[in-house]
Image (cartoon, rainbow, N blue to C red):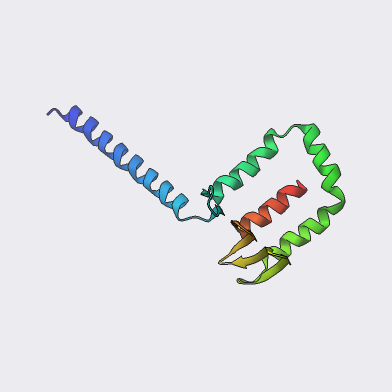
Length: 151
């Protein structure tokens, strides 16, 4: 092979290895990052669950502020404005919650709702006869959502 062909082949090989390596690192970062998980189980009926990387949800919230119509943004500010200091305080408190803390448990007959922290996530479990819902959201994303609410 001529020298120019070897240079082209070497350049292609380096680019290929670099691209595969960068893609592998990106996939690993998403797979091993925090996740939002939702699971719904119905006795004798439909059940489903899904997991979304928290980074995608965070990017979606950040992007939404850029594409939100100004009228909608003003309406949101008008509705949330009086509570923005309370929301910021709540976000700060959520960030400092210890792991495995039960925030609230509500029972009404056979129905139960429980909100707690577990492994750095806010976990919400809802149970009623025949249906169970389980939601996990990383605490950092909960804080970011509360911050987002105050725009």
